[in-house]
Amino acid sequence: MNQAGSLLTGADCGLNDWLAWLETLSPSEIVLGLERVTKVLDRLQPARPDRVIHVAGTNGKGSCVAMLEALFISTGECVGAFTSPHIHQYNERIRIDAAPVSDAEIISAFERVEEARQDLPLTYFEFGALAAILIFESHKTDTVILEVGMGGRLDAVNAIEPDAGIITNVSLDHCDWLGEDIESIASEKAGIMRGDKPFVFGSKNIAESILTQAEKLGTDLHQLGRDFDFTIDSASRDTWAWSGRRMSLAPLEMPALAGKIQLQNAAAVLALIEAMHLDYLLDNELINAAFARLELAGRCQLIETDRTWLFDVAHNAEAAGVLSEQLAEMPVGGKKIAIIGMLSDKDQTGIVSPLREQINTWIAVTADGNRALPARKLAAGIANLCGKPCLVSENLPGAMRYAHDHSSADDLILVTGSFYVVGPALKWLVL
Image (cartoon, rainbow, N blue to C red; front, top):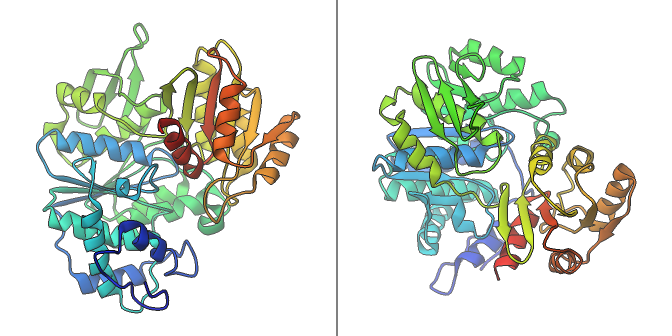
């Protein structure tokens, strides 16, 4: 490979070689802006899918993408999905009918993007988004679901014109890039909205900047609590009901994804389906079957070995609050041990504070990646916040072994704080 210029192609150049090289293309890991991606798209001229859906928001994006994916697949459509980051391998980011595409397909798409980009310094994320669009074109996808990486207005995904979209919610995250307050962050996320097209806001707490932008553009905005809602059966608590502007569905079975927050995500997905007038998908039997097959690694994922392990990314304050509620409801007979690592640009106080009453023992690790917060610095912050010592592990495998060896079958071991901790931890446990 020639680091100064283009990647040299050949049979000996594998996907991992490409990914390592992509990290050298841009001086910054995150560079917001559409100009570079738009120029490369103009050179590539990919055919546009029949239907494009954007999914933005602070939390719940992956769940909403998985739900939309499952619904459209159930009707026999060819469905493409682009998400980030990945848990185990890069291929998870680009899926056809919920299955990761092959190394060969990704490399072929990378080669086309590289040929078209010329001297433009694309980021790792931008390169992958463009490759995904080419792969979806090659599969002649009917529906493409694109998860916004960060914000919305200037995210690479927003260079692809949507037919509709979801903003799941807005809370403080990525403040260094998106703004220091909710209104500023919401304004960036509102950038995916288009005039005369349906968009859903999946929370009852809506920022004024989103309402203002929707009114300015003439967006058909559907908001939780105003245009659609959901309830849980108070007697059995095994079923739920959904109501929209035109239709209502009940009873519905609980989605396979754990946590009450998944009903909020599911309600937003059904609201989008209704807003797009795809009424054939609003069928109890179809929805129950689609949502029963859902799997999402690293999001409130329980794994039982000779110990009970819970994996949840929870990489911002709102997600940590949801995780805390989930922990409070879990019947744990013994203590709760948390292995935690996070990136340096994350809100350490906001993530740790909701969990401190639930966790008996903390173990800090350094997450993978250049932006990782050092374990010792993280441990010092946790100790100050919680008023109790936080152990420091030199590496994640050491933390996993320590938690296992110093726990019993009655205890719960939580791994949290970042995709860059949860992914490697899941891999360690499986291997």
